[in-house]
Length: 203
Image 1 (cartoon, one colour):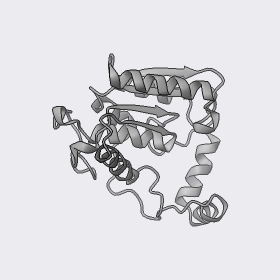
Image 2 (cartoon, helix red, strand yellow):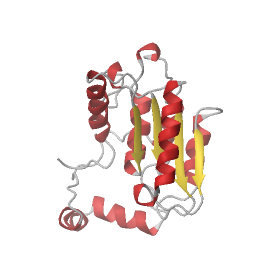
Image 3 (cartoon, helix red, strand yellow):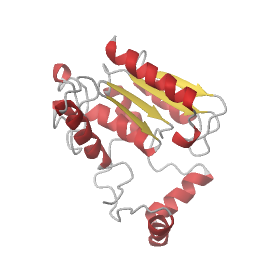
């Protein structure tokens, strides 16, 4: 397959969640890092629990997967090191990433240097931005985790997401000394996330 950089990956996640429920898991928590963090946010906005189907205001039903399968919904969402908005180029790592994604020479480097095949098509339509997705995740619990030394996305990103979620809509952890995504998440943080996910779906 080819990466669509957070667009159609939401369909992969929905299929995985639905499969987990078919296997008998009553509660499913989605966890995503970096691009995956944006995917879990969008998935949480687009797939409703049966009791709340159609209740989230303003969901873009033109977006692939919107309301497609109530069995594909998440009971809680954890987003780590996610961007708040698309097309961000405010840091050197993100400028390099945009070169990899948008230029033929960059995609060549991505394929043979990083073993990642990237789709050549532009987004059409542009997916729901993370900052627009977070208000639509409730009533599912939402945890946002971000490092204060993230070289890709500065702290205005998680703060924008938390603000967009509204009062009580999200819990924000700003981790001191943490860099970006899974490579920067130590075992202690992962244990805390697991405990939050367990408590948030069994309460």
